[in-house]
Length: 281
Image (tube, rainbow, N blue to C red; front, side, top):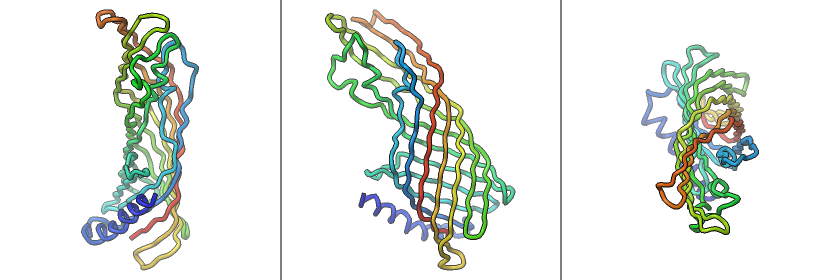
């Protein structure tokens, strides 16, 4: 935790000098912030049939995080925001970026991208009532992937007294890359052996993601700078399924059984919020 705090300080302090001097003339105004928050996701679970439902084993990390955020106000009504969350090993697994065009002071258009880590719990996937795994630990692992979001929407900035912020109404596409896993299995009370493969193609799902940012100005060290508290929150919702092709080889690769498995869509709901400090210069 100490290393993480040091990294946040070292990240934010030099940013002032970088934006203020190196890029003078490009940015009208800049904001950096550090924050801590919580991200939680709930995936609807359904009773499994004889065919494994991969949505029951898909999971997002539900955890506390620390993060950094940079927001720059460009010329010609353009803004750009990039945000990342840091874990205890100082890895930035979550990345969020947003481009904003403000043709009017009260409404704007946004384009966004996000990359969020997800994982499949493979131990449960390969567990069968009549078979057990014959290679130790081959199924006691997790498959990691990146859930990528491609978003577009509207921005509604507001300001009153020492409070200001922006409401974002966004929607788009959630993308999961292709994946592949396998398990060697042996039948109980029998010599029968088989290889089971799960070939998971890439998949897409529609997503909605409203978001809000609220800032409270505490102090103005100079006429061009301000310091204050910041709250950010967003809600995510989508419905998706994960189809796959299952290949079962019994005894030899010549004895192959192939099935294409599909299940109804299940809901995914996420809540992400954080509180921190901002510095505008």
